[in-house]
Image 1 (cartoon, rainbow, N blue to C red):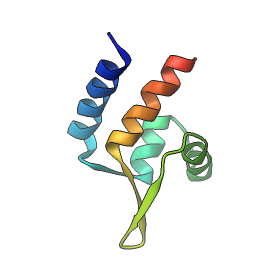
Image 2 (cartoon, rainbow, N blue to C red):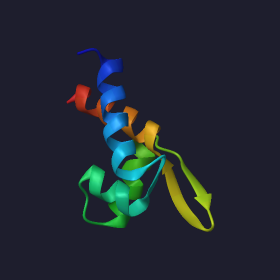
Image 3 (cartoon, rainbow, N blue to C red):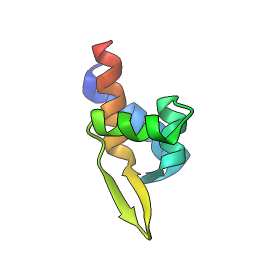
Image 4 (spheres, one colour):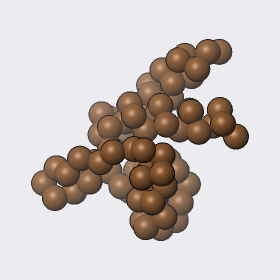
Length: 75
């Protein structure tokens, strides 16, 4: 499976689970951290930008999918 196919597959899975935007709690679950601080640090390191909506951080599901697949390929 090519990288773009893997990203598309992960994108479909995440969108089915979370919709188009993910909360910090959703990101904690997907990244596998137990603390909010570690998750926010990892999001910055993975270059996953957040958008403030009504005072809460939201993350674009498509970008999260892409970064997770790219990170998996680097391991």
